[in-house]
Image (spheres, helix red, strand yellow):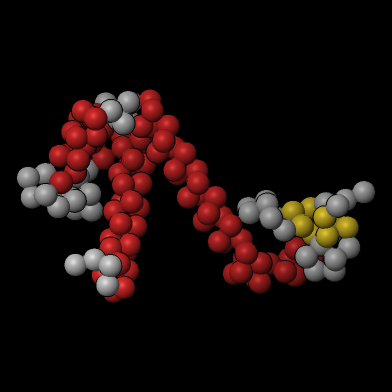
Amino acid sequence: MSTHQCEVCKEPATKRCTRCKSVYYCCVEHQKLDWKNHKKNVCNDAFKADQHTLHKQEFDRIIKKYKLDTEEKSSQIADFLTGSSGSVGVENQVSAPEFAEKFGTSQEEAVVFLEWIKVGVKFKEEALDVAKKSGFSR
């Protein structure tokens, strides 16, 4: 007997959304009936969160595989990303092929690495903006 309830009728359910895996249904008809609401309110957020986690895990794997977390490599990466200007150039200056060649990664790994760096830079910029608006930063 199932311990899960159908999202639509609350009866026992064994089928679940294959995308987000967070909602159960007793039948295909109920899944179809709930799809617009589910996709808009549940599935997209869960899917995005899952993709975020997978991306971070791949980033961590790349760092470990190529030993990019050493002080020497970290400094080289920082210099490579900021260039001589001192500002982060990930968005418009650094290409995945250049990164791959310099640090010995595949181009696909370089894309993952650089995209995750963009996530970190965006987070830092947003946090600094909030701090400035709150009066915690000069």
